[in-house]
Image 1: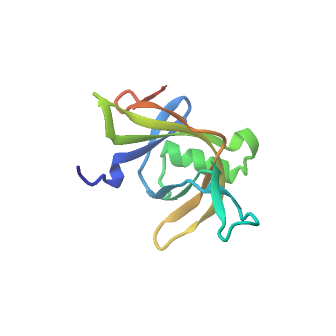
Image 2 (image 1 turned 90 degrees about the vertical axis):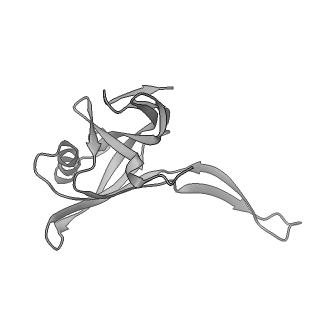
Image 3 (image 1 turned 180 degrees about the vertical axis):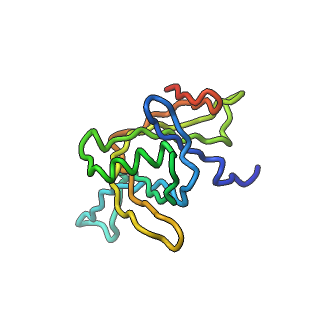
Length: 154
């Protein structure tokens, strides 16, 4: 048993039919499950009860802008064009390198997100872009081949 490093969770954005690693320049790419709850207290009870009824997953992101990075260019184009609807949708695969399935195959989850850009501006030394990806439905569990950069649904 050992500590799992942050670098053992990798994310890939689908760009023009190919998965590109989300990495260079990114200072934040954090998934939030945002659980939805149903709470109530019945008249004969002294305490409230809560049930988990769903999730509204999102990913906060921030990156130092680099030239010629396909992932960054995709997110920046959505921001600069003020894209809406399907034009603001992306597909992300999150691969868990510590959950090896043999060879270069690892457990993974694929999900469609809507890009909700927030800020584009100067940091201390670099142009910084940030925002949130908000889930467009359920994730799909499967496996990701880190060599071939392909996702296979379970």
